[in-house]
Amino acid sequence: MEVVTNLNVESFGKLRLFYTRVLSVGDGIVKRHCKIWDFQSLNVVIGIGSFLSFLFAITCAYLYLFPSVQPVIRSYEISKPGSSISKPGSSIEKCNVFEGKWIPDESYPLYNASQCPFAESGFNCLANGRRDRGYLKWRWKPKNCEILRFNAREILEKLRGKRVVFVGDSLSRTQWESFVCMLMTGVDDRRSVYEVNGKKITKQIRFLGVRFSTYNLKVDFYRSVFLVQPSSAPRRAPKRVKSTLRLDLLDDISREWIDSDVLIFNSGHWWTPTKLFEMGCYFQVGKSLKLGMPINTAFRKALGTWASWVETMVNTNKTSVFFRTFESSHWGGKNRNTCKVTRRPWSNTRGQDRSSISDNIIKVVKKMRVPVRLLHVTQMGAFRSDGHVGTWGDHPSVPDCSHWCLPGVPDMWNEILMSSLLTMNNVPLQ
Image (cartoon, rainbow, N blue to C red; front, side, top):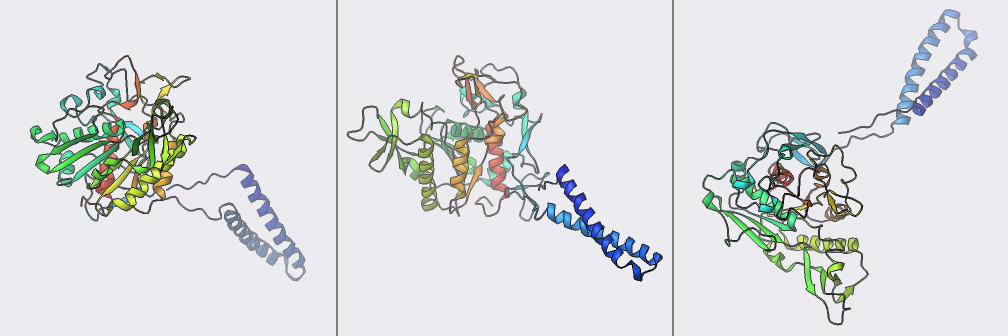
């Protein structure tokens, strides 16, 4: 809770003037009646009147300066420090877990990417030659509470018999890989965990699924960078139109997302001119081609289609739905084409804590008729200029200030994800 109580010089001036006028009125009243009182009685009355006037003046001035101050209560629930996984009836504190700071923590990282067969080699920065390890030793600390520590064995038990689905672009795949690697630390027999189709983790595969057979748990990833349906160019379209995005139709693989217990979406990094217009991809609604539609408008339209699909197709009594906001990138230079990976997080966000993509996501989710939880990671990622792949990826000559090293920042997204699920009421994991 936060109440602002700073008084400026002008406010104190008003208070002094008000007090002076009240005393003057009281003094005038006394003078008009002094003829019927003796001198001693007059001193007593003046003393009492002055004291009452002072209290009255203070009360009025306070009401004048602070008419209706109400404490601010954040609506995000998280358990108080000291617990592992909250039990029914345990103490719950409301808190915005996305307001806070990164603090050093030598107990991190949570896993070794080289020992996890589901971590992409391109995200394993240590194996690719990164020498400094400081970027691995940071934990996100919310301002007014603690995030539950990730306990792989307990979470595997909670997820027994469940299906967790990640849907989105390559940043969603990174979060999926992080989540699987975190869970792997709680498995005794590593052979009991496998990709269901025997596929190697690559960038272009539309579906990847890892099964934890001991727990009958599936953790899936579906590649859907726009969430809405890609389509071929309509007949008689201008030559520059090579393909379209059907803003009024969700991706055709969406039918495979429905039967899940936890469903986590993201989108945003592909909604750029270079990924769309320069590739000949434009927008379409119904049979109408929208050549002049701005990307921001199209993104809002696509989010509206997604929201309508969730409201009509997903049973939110069974499925907990999340949408992760835009992840801060740290490209620099005049044309945003240089990548400098620092050794420590930035001390401030340098304007990276806001994103029009995130703003649109938040606006759409807030208007939905069914419960969808936001993983608003934009601000917390803005500090982590040290956590990107940089030149320690698959192609060292092509720096990367968009994706994250593993272990790293996406692990914290998953800690918040599971902390949210395990501490909120009416979730399907209880």
